[in-house]
Length: 411
Image 1 (tube, rainbow, N blue to C red):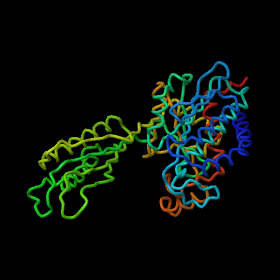
Image 2 (cartoon, rainbow, N blue to C red; image 1 turned 180 degrees about the vertical axis):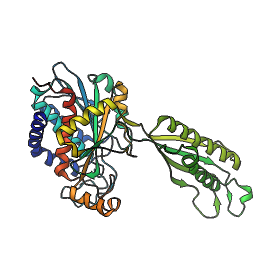
Image 3 (cartoon, helix red, strand yellow; image 1 turned 135 degrees about the vertical axis):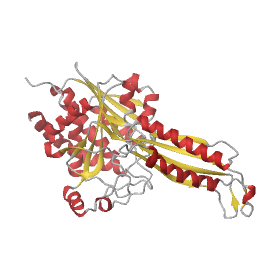
Image 4 (tube, rainbow, N blue to C red; image 1 turned 90 degrees about the horizontal axis):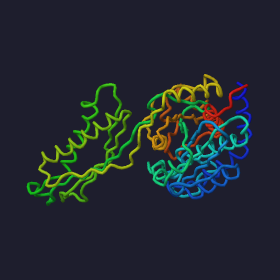
């Protein structure tokens, strides 16, 4: 337990600068691909600690610290905020109107910086190359691809493993991970169906896209309930249906916005095919004068932990935090674009979740059966991680996961 104890002591010393820096980032949130102040502040700290700082994808920042011969570890944090008006009442609440760190990315940034500084200050304890990557625009699924398109894969040393974490509205002081899928793939689809407009009093002269769209919505409900094998996970949501502007005009088109979540790449493809089949079939049945249009956007890949790498990192967490603090989490229905980065290198990765709700608050809500009602979720205007102990735990988790690969063997 010597390494775990030494790491805990060193991380505790980092909190003196981490807490005010976290409050600074939370007070000054920036949306995806506009994280200019955040990016500059991160780059300044990395450079001061001896990292070779590189920039990719506009506001993306990478710090590379080479420390002799050994494995390569890439650790990633996302930086962007959300278009949400904060309602936490915190003394360090957002000063940017309509923008808020409602998903904890500011916590991710400061935790990764803390781990980076710890490794920079304790180079005698490890060998290899540590790469700290700060990614923009996770919330729009654009940031990791923007960094890759800007030459990331060729512009940094090839790592052997990639690491990432996310704060969640679970009990602070705990860490959850799992082999295999931990976050779902996510796909949004914009579908435009066409009709023939007419006066509302003359429906016989129209092809009504409102009725057509309504039929599509009802039929899509059978994709999960009747076309997906029981026990297989999928969520298909019609989040928007828009058509027309007034009561007595039958419009000439309707637009539907769909969202799909899956843990299985083959099922994902099958459901996409079913969506297009149903839409085209309903359009044909309605006599639509034009083929429907499909636009796929905000597409997130599946996040699926490598079993061997996950076991190694989970063992490091157990050593650092104790068995009671580490658990196997169920897969989450949220989505991420992190996995595009390790997939571009063809390397394994591990993604885990860190609790952020004060233990007494969380346990009381669990006992009362009021977790959903009483605990603000990510993206809520009231979402605010408990800094103590979440920041220290998230920082130690990043350091422990990296040292699971980089630490110099004892003796």
